Image 1: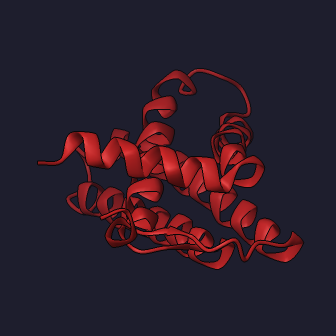
Image 2 (image 1 turned 180 degrees about the horizontal axis):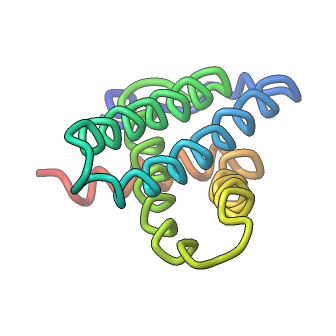
Length: 135
């Protein structure tokens, strides 16, 4: 059953790690932009849809970074979705902070570190979590 959920292939190297970090950093920037669009929702009809698009692009960026780093299957979307969701939650705390875009990228990179440090452990942990949550 764990193979159906996806896995980590073990095909990671310095370039795949750098690509993953770049994708997570991009997601941090995109999440900051989408949070700033929240203020425009009352004035511009497109702001809400724009936020959805930015969230989808952030999810795609992190998913592609995970895929390149060696993750496969539905596990990629679960990991990416969790990272983007947690990053989006942090955006509320960054609202009044100076250099909020920089902080958003730093937090995104910090959230992505477990994938670089212990990718097999992250994969195994998420597999167990998904098995525990599922029927």
